[in-house]
Amino acid sequence: MSEEEHSATEEFERQPVPSSALKGPGKFWGMYAGEHTAGTEFMIGPLFLAAGASIQDLILGLLLGNILATLTWRFLVTPIAMSKRLTLYYQLERIAGGGGVKLYNFVNGLLFCFLAGAMVTVSASAVGVPFGVTFEVPENWWQLSSPAFTVIVLLTGAVIAAIASRGYEMVARVANIAAPWMIIVFAACGLVSYTIMQSGDAFTWSDAVAFIQEKDGVQEFGFWKIVIFAWLCNGAMHFGMADLSIFRFARDKSSGWAPAIGMFLGHYVAWICAALLLAAQIKLSQDTTANPGMLAWSAIGWTGIVCVIIAGWTTANPTIYRAGLAFQALFPNSKRVVMTLVAGLVATVAGAFPTLSGKLLDFVGTYGTVLGPMGAVIFVDFWLMKRFGLRDEYAHATKSFFHPAALVAWLLPVIVGLYLIFAQGVFAAYLVIPCWLACGLLYLVLSKLTQKNA
Image (tube, rainbow, N blue to C red):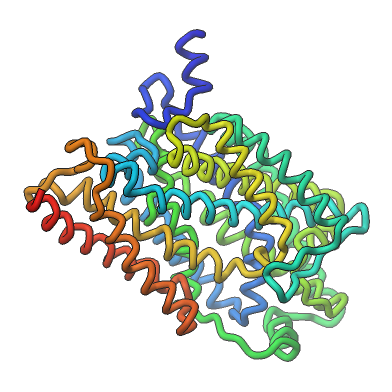
């Protein structure tokens, strides 16, 4: 096998990415456009409307939040990724030891599988429309939809997992092909929906919010809540450093701006357009069900169906790829392809439970709170350890299998965060940064204590 062929198939899970395998900015712009102008947008956009967000707060809040998210990717993740060129998981192993990060890697892979599972549900919702198979979000988390919909989920998930198992090159290629077309379709959905709302008796965004609030009860989702959600809904990827695994392939720093296309075409334009789909549906049929396949079908027919299928696919692909790397880090001697297929299986099973897709506003904040803080360990280890007279990558330097500082520093803030979310009802996204800061400080203090004793 030539060096070029080897580089195209090797994922460098336990070594720095060599210069021969680095990729230009186009690969990253395409992937982020495909991942974030995608399946989640068909679910999250309508959920903003259902939560009572005003159109003014949504436009301004998403603008600020997405600027902050882009800056975080560019200046927090990219410099470390390009310096180390290691996956998140191997970098943590060098810091905390193989035994010190097994729990984190398991939780990381599992939560990414759940997120990918929601996208499998989104794609399956569109596959089922031509066959008259739809789904409703059950009250019970553990309740399946109809047998027919469950079969469609299983088949859809199998295809997505097979693509993800081919590696980053295939993931990026699919996204580059799909992204430009999907962006146009999202815009078309928004324009058609707005035209429907203005035809005949005008029906405004506020009218749609009032209809939902009267039916389902009053909720509030104000400006700052929107800002924090837009900034931190991908907290696991940027604050949590999961995208070290992506940007380790970057040839130059300009690739670090690539998330901007996903944030502003996906988490801005596409969210608002998807919300307009639900508003138009309420005007036409008084139906508040946020079924992505039916929403797109009602607006633009077969084009919408194909878009929803591919949109879920292009989000699930890189997410399953990340999950596969996490599982592969649990078993270093395993094959990444096998672990990616395992991740795809878990994601597919999760996708068969539609309640997950209906709770995305809460779920993405929770998984950011759980996974985000470990990124502070990497940040402190890279930027601060030597300045405080401490060893960076301590487990690697001392050939230690278990250095507890990172694990303890991660667990304590996360436990407090989960208590506040589930026992006190705190909005999950609010806790990503406090937990991140607490984890970084704890890691520095615990490293000072343990390294001194060592």
